[in-house]
Image (cartoon, rainbow, N blue to C red):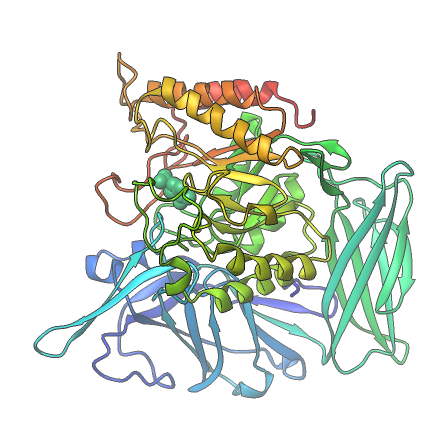
Length: 601
Ligand code: GCB
């Protein structure tokens, strides 16, 4: 799927702004062809939850509606017109002038609807019904229940099986774009690089949609806009000599300019930026452009005040700037694919990304008592009760479709903290890994992210992973406050992983301690700023002893909102920055450490 851009053959209009909004009480049916019977409004893109002063709307679970009007300029009427939702969380039914024109389930990936035939001349009514229901068939996974009072009123409830607020709505931009009737539908860029010869063979595949071009030309432009290679056809190999590599924190982007022609005339033009780099896992190292790379950075969230999970480009820019200042080079899109805009920004800024599917919460019986788990044959109900495989496959398809060309993405995470320790995990994950390997034109490494109970003995499917990625909270959830015992456990476990898989790189994808900014303790107690620093110092010390250790991504970049809970104080406080991005004192320690560790060994 191509990102909507304007070129000499394409226009993009923005349908963001203020929309009508209404929570569906499920009492009177709503007619999507009529003005919504509501005076409420919501800004788009943004989650609806934190834009309201009404606690009931904020926590509404079920269905809700958005609506706006738009007109299309006459000059575009003979064009192919496409409505593109950057995301609609989590399920959407789209109506144009009262008719259902599209439906999509999955809250973190874009979808498009061709609407050329459904438009009326002057004033089009666009109505979107959404649902924020999550259950055992969706990713993320939610514990869903319904109850009815005496008057028959239905209450729906989602108890999130994950640790972030279930922000929903039209979270990402809504655009209306035009293409000609013969159009470039997709471009796949797969560069094969000869590092010694500084040469890349760029395999470009172009998909022609609608009417058929009789000629397709491809030009690769360098970063200054000069043509450096040309070819023609839908399946081309273009050679780049003296290739400029896309490097972590030193991005270099080429542009593939594709032109579709009919009868000697240019019909459609699209420009796809791409970087050239190699990614490889070998001998316990993670190589980027042939050199052992060390990940320094974060697990993040799309989470800001008021916008919720809505696109916030100023925060995206600030976050990357703060990362760079700290000497960080990477983050994971925990726990769902982030916006197109963020991924494109990372391409530009040279930030290395591990992209995660929305598969979080694939574990139905979490317990802090793990005495049974390491026994061979351990089984809980997860893989019997969950029915997520279809949604998971769809997410992998959609992520690859959207993000396959991005140089910044160096690895895909298929899931976060599933019950990999339970019998049935291998059977569940093997086909998904196979699918991802088959779909990715750049053949990036694959992983999933392991919960503490998935250890070298208990993890049933770690053989599928290219990199062992661990979320560990020794000293926080386990042996709280005891950093001596935690240091020993951290070391023992890392050594055990290394012994089990001497050729697989190992990294931490989460480790952290909740910290209230401004809370100090002469005894370095948990929740204090002192403890947070001690905790990170302990972990750093052990990391530096493990030969195959290739990276540290801490939890979390910033404090973020969650559901209520006795362990949460207006959200998760493991951020090294507050939710409004003020640094906690540990940032000084981490900046010093990361600025002194090179990106490459
Ligand atoms: C985890 C989860 C993450 C939570 C974190 C925590 O293991 O992957 O989503 O926020 O722990 O702070 O509990």
